[in-house]
Length: 462
Image (cartoon, rainbow, N blue to C red):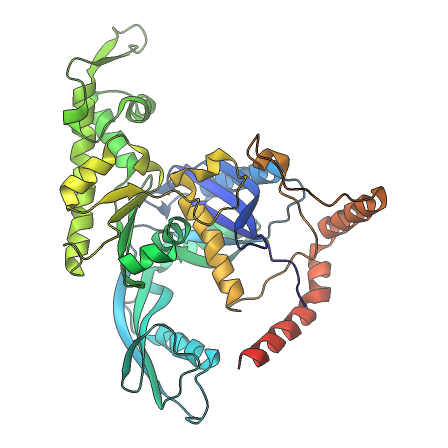
């Protein structure tokens, strides 16, 4: 029974912006964007929700904008990104001795092995966000990427466990709940960004994803297809803006504007004789600011962020030439001029900008191809990973939904669509109205069917 794919919504609660994107995979496995909204974020500092009321307002504005882009959307559950310097990671080892050693290893046994890791001791006040298996072992065979179907007595794995502060997690969940949404899952932001900007060959080659956001810089390191390390560095674009504001004695809005329009991460590349004129406040004389000085300030902070990246790569022994894929920078802060050159100079690795177009269907609007939206698009992909592995229950929509014209790139030749009769359209409209009125009852009716469906699929898999 081939039902339509579910619509999955990513909610990126960032320091500078909150973005909500709804997407669904098409028949080619590419992501079609069905709705998109963003809002300025005020209640978040360094990736942590500090002011819940302000954050709720911003979430609701982003949702309103998302609905405005596609009035037919129904958003009740979201995948939410998490960052902040309270995030920590640790490595553990887990094994299980199998009961039925004559049978092949099943998905259920692997799920049990992963579930057991949630009982790992972690300091009070922290909470496990995610448990990511690295390489598996079956008896004496090591480095197995996927042990399902193998036979053996003992199966085990090395795990990468990500933890966060309970209060910080509670604040995110509270802000989402009070916006009348349900958090389907919390996903570490660098893992979401990595999902959006990387293909399988990047994972194999070895790569470090550096997501430079407003409040934090998130890092995820992959080597030989395995997640080796994650970290959240507590500096981002906001820190650069504040440095400019303090160093040059300007307003924060002016500092941000100068950074975006005239900023460079390499002072050598900035023209020595170029100046920016800023109007004075309330009758004060205008200010002349050197582009060279501006670049000096940006370079100092950016070098510091990249030093942190180098430090983390050294910790896992991957700072030399081991990462053939080099460094992939994404996030809003990656759009600074000459950042690639600075990164290569500081880290000694090749660098490039990662755009979240790797898994997007053709015909999306240009805005969404910016590195700023990597985390949000990655959250949808993480949701699909859950869906495809039967990790969670999904409402599969049961209705056809088109990509709205305003979310298609202008000038793209749209694929021929089935011409519906007026009667079909009317029926569709009635169905949409019904969905709007009683989504809960509608879901209730089909819930049992879906549970049975998952059971059937599980039986086939076993």
